[in-house]
Length: 171
Image (cartoon, rainbow, N blue to C red; front, side):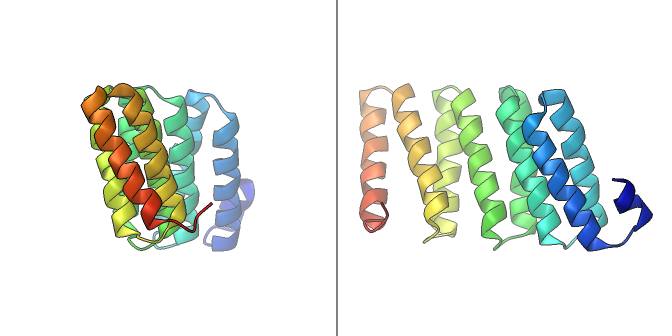
């Protein structure tokens, strides 16, 4: 942080600071992670257009969503969606958004989880060929099937089968 302030405007130092904040957010409790993510947001805004700093911010939001209750995670996922739209085409930011949606779906009831998994489906289709996003979608479908009645679970399993056929070569 001190170096970032001393050499203000140096994006390489700012990026190192952002990566450090992301790592720290993984080790902190929810309150500490909120502070780190807040600083990541400030860096992302200050160095707007720097996708690596934006990615560190996205990963920090993902870490935070892990620690939050459903309402808090909804807010983090909303910020991830905004970042994903702002940096459309950046598959790493999209993957952080997908992982945040997955975290959120685990905290939600069936209806909420269904909505989050549908958003995962949209991301998977938008970034067709991205096996990591497809995998997050698949795990989301699997988890959703546990919350559903038999008919709902059959639909989730059908969608899983479609994914598995689409990504036959993935082990």
